[in-house]
Length: 443
Ligand code: GLU
Image (cartoon, rainbow, N blue to C red; front, side):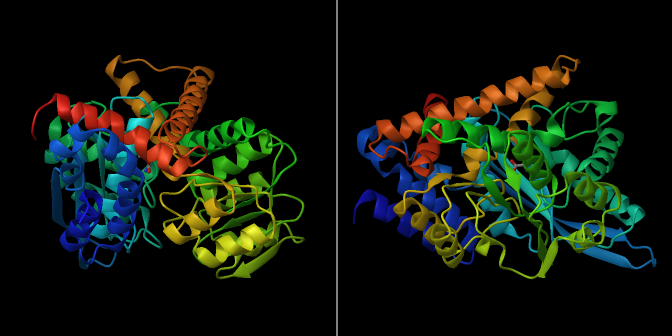
């Protein structure tokens, strides 16, 4: 058995019942084949074996009391995956589907994504199976306080710095930070995604969506194409999707769809962003409300968004939302580029289908790295007790995204797979972490 086949085999054996983690890790290991073949030292030092096993996995009970006075119990998680290049860094996800497989896949992706940003941050992720949908503000606060009552002992500005992800936005970070500060008596940057009034960074809210468009722009330009005049099919309606939509429109694109877990909207005139912000950010309503503001738009219950003809597809909702049949539909309808705004929204089969059909494909660990990049800039500002203005931070984000594209494109060329940005991202992200691990001795 070759070394790589053996690695994949062990991965399967050691992580049965963790399909999402296996999917993420399999993709990375497959990309690394030429790297391992060229650099015997990584094999000798057991880098792959160490990298696929988290430094630490924490699981805890979160007890809280709902508005009816009933005691409720949820599970809390934090996976500290790798801190070779900096403190563990990655979001918290509150969603009923959360389990170790989901948190491990997200934490694993985060190692390479964070490495690609060029900033000193390691990989981690956490969350809970708590469902924020339909909960009152008081219930959210009580839950966050209880969650942090355990989490605080595991995190810190130089140890592990959580942020938001699905179900965790500015409000939740505020409650989490308040409890952290109460318990530790320290006003430090132990969380990012904070509001501006107590240490947040300008551009953090917009960063994942804006960054996605900056990377897409770089990828298109390198292939003699542009955003201007292109039709976008975009999924999701959370923070990533909203600011991706905004930047796509600013750059001359026309976004015709958005979605939530119940269905999706199609607006042939282009999505009216002010309406979306009113529905999602102000009133916190379902997306189906859109048609009451824009009667010419159509609301579709359930799936089917990827059958909308477009030039560019931006999956910005959640993992595995774009399957092989969707990819076939998109290719048939003439898509030229796909860039992932969510984490692992495209299945392995769908990714391979795009690549086999020469569709430009930007993997999430490169294209959605803008969020965590500005989180690292928030950490930097907290450390120097200062805050930079919007344009300065936005320019830094743009440069980081352009540099990421350069890195993934160069690595793909260097390892004989030009234009394969999936392999390029995995290789470039890996090399920095692997070298840092080698330098620090066995751990
Ligand atoms: N949850 C985001 C991500 O998937 C941001 C993480 C962070 O800012 O730490 O990268």
